[in-house]
Length: 142
Image (cartoon, rainbow, N blue to C red; front, side):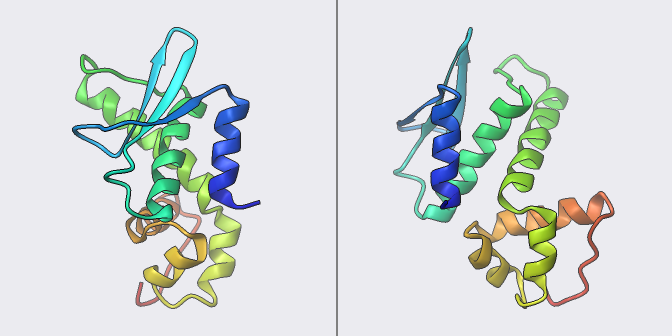
């Protein structure tokens, strides 16, 4: 199954409505009110399927890790919530075993991003995450 479609199916199974909604400060946002969740995606700002996939995975990361915050949250709390959502998205879109396998044939970040159908900045974040936790060592021109 296409990984973008898989993300939409995951949201549907969890009862999360996904709406195209103009946002002033970001491309995507998850909203939680009591037991109701919705994800707003601003398709005016999202230019590619790779961007849409990364945005949706990140917002689902907030949902799946329970890391929600609001405008009154401390910067430290916001940073922690964002890191947990990113970690979930990375593990979902760029599993370590697949990254190791792909890195044998992909010569740079661009090729890895194409392979996983994510943005180049996301693949860089994924590689940095796996290097930081000590499970990946990349010695190439990436």
